Amino acid sequence: MIEILQLPLGPLQTNCYLLGCQQTMEAAVIDPAWDGRGIAATAVEKGYIITHILLTHAHFDHVGGLAQLQEETNAPIYIHPDAVQMLSQATMSAAFFGLTIPDPPEPDHLLAEGDVIQMGKLSLDVLYTPGHAPGHVCFHLASHRVLFDGDVLFQQSIGRTDLPGGDHATLMHSIRHQLLALPDETHVLSGHGPATTIGAERADNPFLL
Image: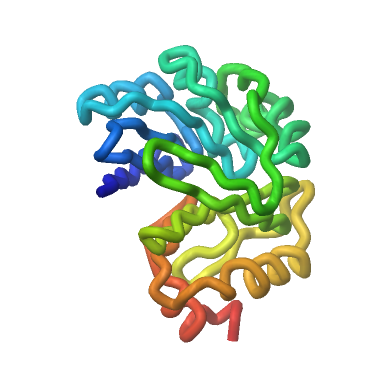
């Protein structure tokens, strides 16, 4: 059994996800957007021990709570190597928008396409999905048909590509060759907004028609 909590956090209401394995009471945090201490407290309230911090990418609104969360939990941080430079610049990027975040800590593990992350009794497949940001990845929990997709695909929309390192053609390639290859019933849990499914977006997303 699993539990997934969606936590919209920070000034951009970025979705942080707490994925809990109810057999082992271990949990992963995907994209600690803001208020890392609050995320840690939520896990404690639910009885979970956070053992993994997984980053889909390193835009500041997805890592604003990273330093606090790592300080509270000492959990290892996972990121794609192409996203490390942007992670190191996250504080400066936030300041450009008039926001302040703590300097993100160094990552502990570098991810690659095809990696499998074992968290409790759960296995998350790493999908390499650049286009919105360098080193963007998605985490696919195939056993439960759930995809944590960061800012690649949204309900009726797609990730923006006008930020540094973004590229529209690359994003569309990632969507068509990685995400649309998944079953229609796959639940898509995005970095912003409500959940959707691969089937719903395949059928009605105006950017994919």
